[in-house]
Image (cartoon, rainbow, N blue to C red):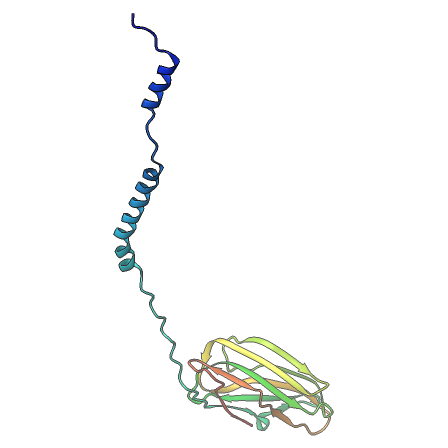
Length: 189
């Protein structure tokens, strides 16, 4: 039987068997792999990145205002207590989709003013119908999902006269048309 090793011998044996730790190898190998992969994939990333496609700018025509609005007092109808005055539109070459009508009247010479859609638009949507009887101002905004070209009655103003009345279309009035970026109202009377 061989002699048993002493404690000094065991210390010597364990020191011999301990591998030397090289921490820099543990760090350098993964770092080197990462750098090599980065260099290898960099050209692929650069060539496969999508190129942004510019969005086309919509082309709108310059204003071709040719629409005329008028208070058609010649075709006004009346009963002993009520006068109905058509507001007519002639779109000219414009295809009209909406009208923002601003009217003024003398509140001392009329009462119970109201406005309603005429027959120009098919199935119009009334967006605003505001009558200020005190100041004699009307704002009536309507539009249609079926734009139209031509001539017709866009609105009907009804009121009870208390004397000779004067109606006017105000300068704030606007008309929208398909393909136009500005108000297409050429004139009003």
